[in-house]
Length: 112
Ligand SMILES: [Zn+2]
Image (cartoon, rainbow, N blue to C red):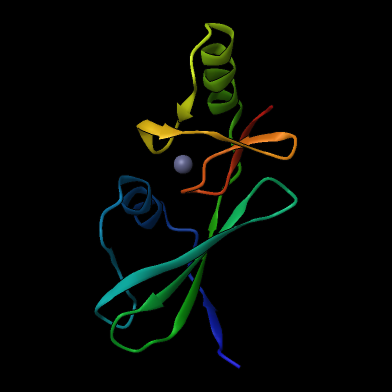
């Protein structure tokens, strides 16, 4: 059984995460992404392991905002394949059940 520690819902960390940059671990070293788990409420949970301590961390990835949803809807209505509003150009949203989700952040941005 591995203890999982909660990372603060930190804007700086999230920004690094969306940009694909290395994220600093609270214990020194950096955080290695193990996976992203979408939650029923539209948020997602990023699971990380610290490169130095091997402690596990969770980071709550906030759900899609109204602005992000509108951006995606506009792209769909314009006949485009929508990109993730956070990961930017080249990160396509994929169909998962009834939702269009980003596999990198686990967040649903539109209904498929
Ligand atoms: Zn994304």
